[in-house]
Length: 235
Image 1 (tube, one colour):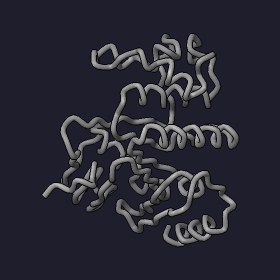
Image 2: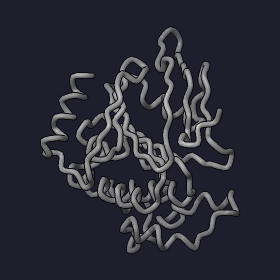
Image 3: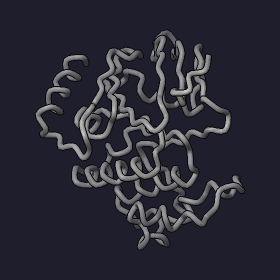
């Protein structure tokens, strides 16, 4: 029976590379307009899991079910992956070349939301790391997916830029009500952002921790620190 509260359902997902099993019998449900963070040590299978959800990596067995065929999945990578010969605006609207249902009319709104209006005609080599990652996020928003997968998108920027990008992402999450699955190695980042934090170890979900705290959240919050210790003990 279809679970109407489940936008994306994973059942018994498995993936191996040679003799190494990187994803092992993973099953979970992601609800509409939810923000889920996945944390775990390097090599635990986080990125491989996201790539399978995005269709960039084939599974060995299991099922990935979207609750309705018209739903779309978009992905934001660790590196911005911008096309150097295109301007900020052209990079953001690139998907419209192959999808006539996407309208460039919403470009000004996306530029404003990401604080990129003044950079609309700049090229990637003229951007800071934080600005480039905003463009990458803008490109995904323009594609208008129901689910946004994010693979450690803020790990390559400095502390202050990361905080700014986190605030921007939370603002967009509040406005757009997308389902976000966010992979990070930073436990505090996961707790500041997510409604739920999944702890991944050896290719499977070891524990799921609800973060029932109002936003915005401060990493120094005592309740957040207790949850942080709980996650660190699970890793």
